[in-house]
Length: 433
Image 1: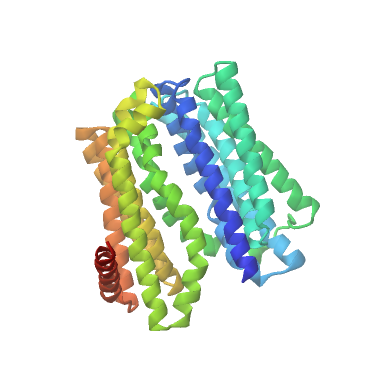
Image 2: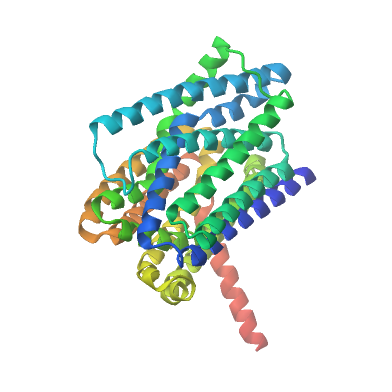
């Protein structure tokens, strides 16, 4: 138990530092990059994540699922076969890129030859993701954070040097991303090979197992991407790079709520499983109270952020980005709902009803795509932020409905007890004053 708490603390600290430093880059980059540069960067990152989802083909999840079924050389061979699957999917992805460039002319904001560089970056990111997943499975929290820190320092130092000293545009930021991915993937793969934790020997049984497990997860992975990144690609096509750049900066401010939910979720998860596994009514009440308190706390943070968005934005970013403040409240409240949705998903995972999660995610992604196409046409970037908020609202309501039908939880009783406790404390305070 002490080891678990220790690892949770390490992961939480590393995640918070990484996201906090990324947020601190905003005031620097907005003074050297134009909104158009930010728009190109947003498109680059969106496509990078799409390609990575395709190339990974959920092999990281497959290895995590089968990790405990094999040991020693068999485990190493299974990991090697997941690489073979990803390599085959990568070849298919490259073929699609070639076909796309031959027959389609879509304005990405930059030359379509950049797609090949994004493809290479996606391969490196996939390798790095697998290695980081392996470190988590091995419970090597310090080494995990060390790799994250190495990647972050490499990325930021190179990007800042190129942009500030040598006056590069958005290409300087991309260069930092590329080099950091190269370093982390080479270090990770070299470590696995040198220590004998991966063996590249084809095995039909392993291939069949990993493909049959990962194939149903790919649509859910793509739908998760669609919920968070489709708006960027549609804004690029339906508005302008400047609008996309402003939206991306405003989105980053709204994501402050997400910075709070990620470390909390990692710390909460082991306690959730411990409490829900006991089956006691009192523990169920504790779970319900934590989720209710977390929801209203996130709402309060989003409200404060939204009300003060204009002067905060003016204080931090360059003048040409000030208009981005209007997107912050919608994005902040969207991530409030997303954080609550993530906590409710733990119930479905515990009940082994992940098929419901996949169905809800796909429905949410399709709704998000439809709303973006309609709302962006009439309201521009504000429509994209509104589509995100509405999609997460539906996602949360559907998930809550599934949880209520699947498990008996004292939601109303817990809420009433919390309200009664707050009022009793308020009355007590008045008596003392």
